[in-house]
Amino acid sequence: MKVAYLNDNQKVWFIRASSGAYARNFRFGKLIAIKHLEEAMGNALGSEIPSEESIKDQLLKNPKYYEFVEDNKTKKNIKTLNRAGTNLLGQIKRFANDICAGDLIVTKNEDGGYSVGICTDSNAYISSEVVELPRPNEEAPAGPTLRYKLRKHVLWGPSITQANLPHSVRRATRGQQTVTNLSGHKEKIFHLIYPFFTDGESLYFSNKIRRQSDINALVIGKLFENVSLAEELIEALLSDAPIDVDAILNSLNLKLFSGGDLVTCKAEFMSPGDMWCKIPLSQAVDLIPQLVAGVFVCLLLTGQATASEFAEGDKQDSFEVAVGESTSSGIFNEKFKAAKPSKALKALQEKIKSKQQDLSEVESKRSTSGIKENLRLGLTDADTAKLEGFEYGINIIELRGSRESR
Image 1 (cartoon, rainbow, N blue to C red):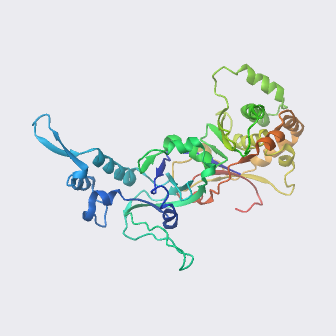
Image 2 (image 1 turned 90 degrees about the vertical axis):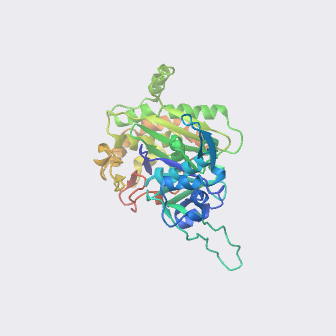
Image 3 (image 1 turned 60 degrees about the horizontal axis):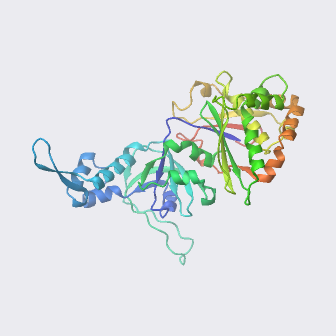
């Protein structure tokens, strides 16, 4: 199980590939590209990216992109970029200068879903080499040919099908600009591809409701109530005290309208739908044990793991927590850098063994298996391996058995 690290410095960009027409070219060529520079420069475009002033001068030669306005001081009409010209120049600058190595790239793909990648080089480049898709045989029709010259290198990871796109994500990408900054929606994008991620202050949990028919309001209410127990159950699991789920629930009821920092959820239970949770973490307790306990507690409360499964495990195996840190500096703070492959997961396993009866009582009282079956709950299961393990890759904390393949 992986817990991804949400990095404040990492931006998220949505690139429109002509409504998905060139998405396969993007993936095959390991790049993104836009046509705006050709539109601005025309035949004046060479093999190097021109300066901003050169682009602006060329735009001012094209009636599509300029207008005359009166100078307040001289009262003379001067030529200036109109709205179309300003937008075109802005898109070029944003693509060339603002998208950096390590930024997450999202584009609409050919099936109406989204493909997710990571920019691997901050430097944009000009290329006249067309990107053609390979044909399985001579009879197969040729795919679209990408000729856009302004490009950046991208390593592509998973694709999310249209059926798995929540409405909130679709709304966030409805703008008309080719290059759109989606950093304000970063959590939504991470929820699409990771079941768990953290910013060091909270644990985020991505859960999918796969039931196709009408959803029982009482069941969904029970699920929300279960998840609300997560923060205090994590604390109880890490302590030496026994777990009393009734006492935890009573404590939460007293805080019901306090406005404090409690577990929160966002949901689209549209049959099927999504539920996204945010669980506060204590800054007074080591992060790694909290994350390990948090993953287990979330799975337990949603019926996707049992105390007995985790406590018994493979008796010949030891459990580790490994931190997959990229070589780029400044992404993990000190509490992450100090973490090395450890026996923290094994220690938690011992805690679970000692509290297995209490945890089994939680499962029974909270109807966890029934909720899972009724709502057909499942985890986000995108294959994110290509987004990790390289210089600008997403940093992850991996929970694994010591005999698992690396």
